[in-house]
Length: 101
Ligand SMILES: Cc1cc2nc3c(=O)[nH]c(=O)nc-3n(C[C@H](O)[C@H](O)[C@H](O)COP(=O)(O)OP(=O)(O)OC[C@H]3O[C@@H](n4cnc5c(N)ncnc54)[C@H](O)[C@@H]3O)c2cc1C
Image (cartoon, helix red, strand yellow):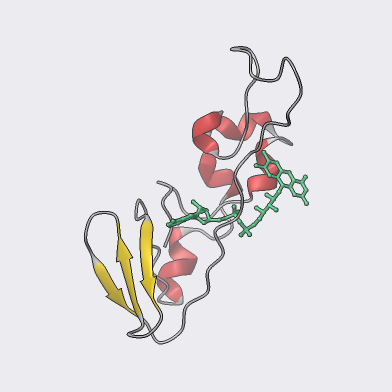
């Protein structure tokens, strides 16, 4: 499950190969065919808001509930602006995902 609108991709390539910005498929970790072959479902645009570890249920922002046997939480990080004068200007950007390109 991801709150992004893409299949999982190699985030490190965002800053290494600017030409990929026009074709996200080039940096996907696995393509649709692979996922289909191994019966892997990626739930896109789903933001987890709550995990109930007692009843093994995941709740998302749109009100959906998903029951699970095992869950791995790997939410990554968010960019942090260091407390340095000048880093909050309009021409200073953070870079986290494809939408920031
Ligand atoms: C531009 C850029 C360049 C980088 N370059 C390098 C590099 O050269 N070398 C290097 O070692 N590292 C680099 N990194 C860091 C590297 O990308 C991360 O360390 C790595 O992606 C972490 O992997 P992850 O799977 O833990 O988290 P992520 O790749 O961040 O994946 C976390 C996923 O969880 C999803 N998520 C988060 N919260 C929720 C929620 N509530 N509900 C549903 N889904 C959610 C996110 O949308 C995302 O899809 C770079 C990072 C960036 C942004």
